[in-house]
Image 1 (cartoon, one colour):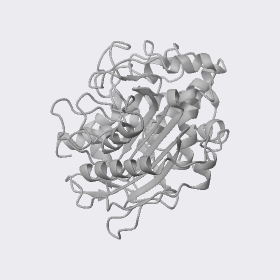
Image 2 (image 1 turned 90 degrees about the vertical axis):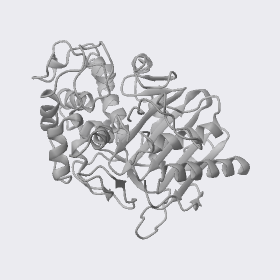
Image 3 (image 1 turned 120 degrees about the vertical axis):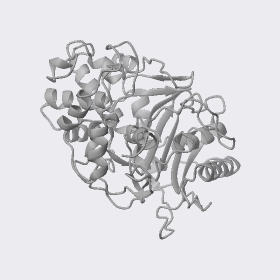
Image 4 (image 1 turned 180 degrees about the vertical axis):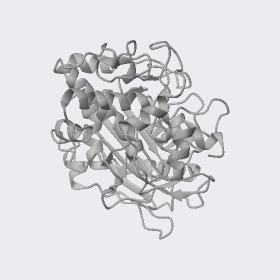
Length: 413
């Protein structure tokens, strides 16, 4: 590990998430919606051609600005649907991005893990204000850290990806498997950031502990629980929780500079076990257009529990219109999560006010002027479709088509 920028990048990698390519988008796009995307979106109509053309231009401009090789974008709402793929999936061959590709979704995984915890809350088997040491032993201050504080990133526990020991181990062998216990060991060796409930710090450690809670209470592995209790009921047929480097075809190559020497490489087949409950899952655009509204509307939860989920807190560095709830955020009315890990970034959000879902998947995590390229795309898209609800996470995030502001780096996904 040779520099603070790369250390900050890996902290972002599992999608608290954030982080120039020689190959930008080639400007070509595939705008044919898949059958499953249109059939389950509430409308099978396509967006007005003029609006679609504006979106194409906005996406391609943002991709060029942030040097994003390829992007998959889906929008589903009462005014029609827009499903498109832009740019390249493989910079070496020039193979185009396609709308039906699988992608690693990083911290969007957190929304599945926390949904599992909240399902157990609805069953009366877990209490949001139970201390974590009721379920997991050995957590520093575990008698004072609650399930709610873990889900809302208010535990004060250090992020294991901030550990230099973890970073050295990971970069020495990105294919190596990590266990949850190993990950927590890295975190617990670091000092706490603040007393439980007294601050906010996005930490993958929190979600790792919540994954262990699901396993302890349900008696199932986290991957099996998520598959049986969340993925299957919603018929997310292309969503998986791998326990190794398995990556279904077809998928794009994922580009990153999170390496020992900072040189760009492909992270396509790196083992995501280090993300586990916080960032290991895989999905497609078709499935995310189902998950977005299900997550925002609480389809798998009681109304009372969903209401608690949506109680947000503000956080340093985030824009005034952003709040973080229980494994979920609200950004100017867009409810959902983003994700980032080496090679890939994802945004999946739903705007209940307009019954509109947005999903974005790109094949790089390389930062643009301190911000996430996926956020730049989401900002550009929402400026077109919902100018009164523009998705923007950080106070000083880069603006599409404008020079980046200076100041605090953008918070990671």
